[in-house]
Amino acid sequence: EPNNPQFQSIFAVQCMQSGDFDEALQTFEKILKALPNDPITLTSMGHALKTKGDSNRAIENYRNAIAAYPKHGEAFFSLANLKTYRFNDEEMDHMLGLQKDGNLGFMERVHVCFALGKAFEDRGDAQQSFACYAQGNRMKKSQSQYDADQVSKELALQQQHVSAALLKERQGWGFDTHDPIFIVGMPRAGSTLIEQILSSHSQVDGTLELPNILSLSQKLRRHPIDGAAPGYPQILELLTQEELTRFGQEFIEDTRSHRQGAAFFIDKMPNNFRHIGLIKMILPEAKIIDARRNPMDCCFSGFKQLFAEGQEFSYSLEDIGQYYRDYIKLMEHWDEVLPGFVLRINNEDLIDDLEGQVRRMLEFCGLPFEQACLNFHDTQRNVRTPSSEQVRQPVNRAGVGQWKKYDTELGPLKQVLGSELLSLSPNSANPKQQQHSEQR
Image 1 (cartoon, rainbow, N blue to C red):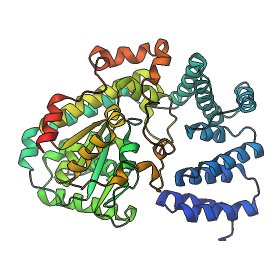
Image 2 (cartoon, rainbow, N blue to C red):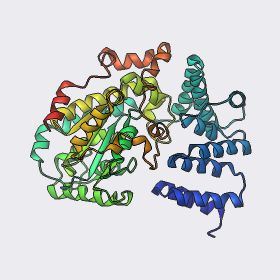
Image 3 (cartoon, helix red, strand yellow):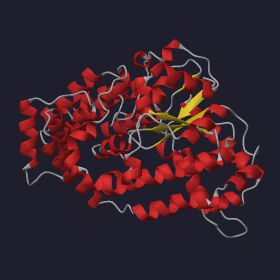
């Protein structure tokens, strides 16, 4: 039954996942005619409007969802997740009442915790804000099986098996195309800003956080060689030139549906930093940009962000600190074995010297300068990440040093990061990496 609201809802969500937000919005409108004030539909419609940049109508939908179902924690969190919304006193009292409600559902409570964390942060109450963020993260961690030490071991395997010698032997292998630009790094490190800048260029399509490289790495974990599966990344030492070329070609073909015809396209999956060796082997002419942010700002921003899925290391200060350290260590390895293959862009440098850093990125990607890249906030495009509203504004330093207001609560994070990372100046790049980038 094509007019069945449940069927229509599934179709609308699929439209959003494929990037057709206009069709999704039209479908949500049809559902609301059949089910007026349905809170789930109102909230989903709010998500679509937010992605398209219509924050006023998104707010209206989220508020209508709350009016229809006062315990709808996701709608409160969605308002907070706009980053630009400020809760009024009535909304604060409502959320505080929900927090005391013993019958509130698990995820509703998690959503309210993160929304209250943002609300108290906006009001300058760091102690109450941190308590709410911490409670929400504790609840999420209680359902997670994330093992920080196991992840550390997996990343160390990349350093062990993807050596300079192996990469030199595979030089020139893979699929020869200049199309993809990968933006990698930690979440909440400024990757959405870099994507918005580059996708403002006439020759670049912005897409989304494409899962293809992660899916390939999972496939290679099970891929048999002579009847046995050596595992990943060990298998990279055994794959043939034909196989690597085929994997690269499949990546280009499988991601074509996300493109709109520009010469270059962006894959903004941050966790691809774990697979830079694989990317080099299958797409040797790809460009990779590492979005880097001050350790404390980056880690605390991740801790206070409730991600839609994945990023389970963000549920504790210790885990996110360990993941950041592992990320830095692996990026140093890639700089060593693939000199000049990765361009590092510090978020603080981008804020302080927008034009200089934009020109640096465009030169690295082989693109001519276009003024639209400096006026990125005027670019009309769908942005799906938590930074969607922030990248529709000119750059500012509002997010720099935010962790300092929570300094007394962040001892566990500082301890895991260690003095060497904490002492890093946010405005200085690794000299070795900077030299390699300039040589490219």
